[in-house]
Image (cartoon, rainbow, N blue to C red; front, side, top):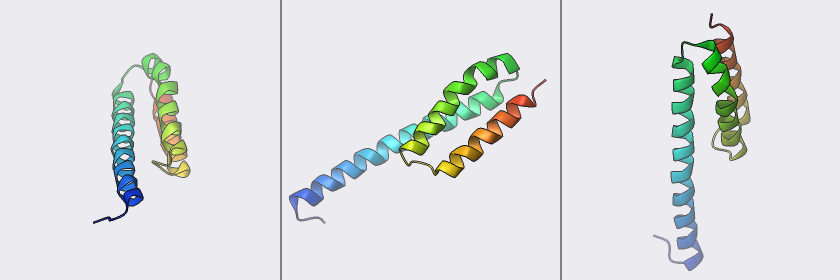
Length: 84
C-alpha cells in the first residue's frame, strides 16, 4: 500500500481516469453496435458523424490506439456504404 500522500492521490486519480475511460469505451461500443444494426442507410448515414467523433475522442484520450480508431472508422463506413 502507498505510504506517501502524493502516491495515494495518484492512485485515486488513476482509478477515476480508469472509470471514465471504461465509460467512454462502453458508450462508444454501444453506439457502434446500434449504428451497425440500423437497416436504413439514411438513418445510419445521419448518425455516422456522431459515432466517428466518439471514436476520434477515444483515440485522442489514448483509450484506444489511433490505428485501431482508423480501422474501426474504415470498417463502419464500408458496412454503411454496402447497405442498399
